[in-house]
Image 1 (cartoon, helix red, strand yellow):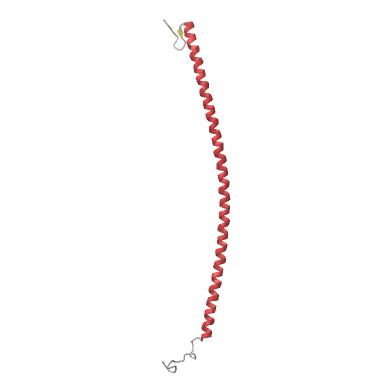
Image 2: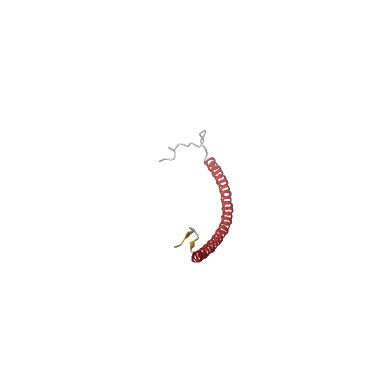
Length: 122
């Protein structure tokens, strides 16, 4: 194609020159970089806040775990004391029942009367 056949549009009204087009793109890129920089700063702040929140929640979790372990230990100790008391009480009841049984047999042998029914034994 002959260069004379190509229409020169550089002097047309409203057509930007190469320099104007480059400047326009440069401003667009500058604006985009500024926007991305702002987004990056916001993202960094958000990440920092999330890290802080995680640290706070982790501390609370550890504190609650410690409290739970203390409560479990306390409940275990209480359960052990209850078991000891039940065992002691059962032994005392069995000992009392044995004494009552022995006394009942002696009364019956000595008086000939069943003390629970007050009926004479023939």
